[in-house]
Image 1 (cartoon, rainbow, N blue to C red):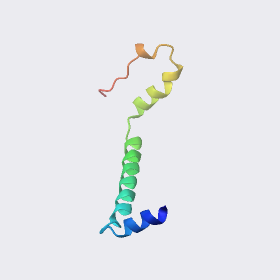
Image 2: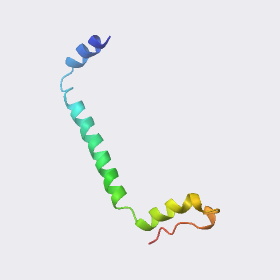
Image 3: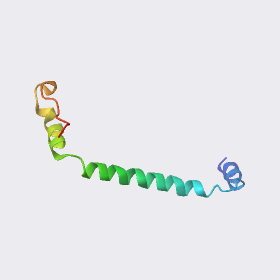
Image 4: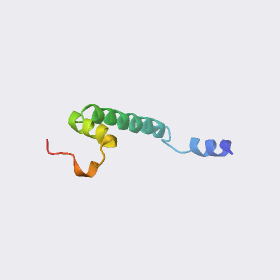
Length: 66
C-alpha cells in the first residue's frame, strides 16, 4: 500500500517542498513557544503556581494590568 502512495507522491511536481515547510512550521512554533515562556511575567507565573494551594482561588483574581 505504501508503494502506491509513494508512487503517487513522486509524480506530483513540487512535492519536495512539503517536508521542508512542515519542518519550518514545527520549528517556528516551538521557537515562538519558547520565547513566550521566557518572556512571561514572573508575577503571573508565581500566582499560577500558588493557585493549587489557595482554598478559594476565585477570591484572588490575577492582576493582568501590570
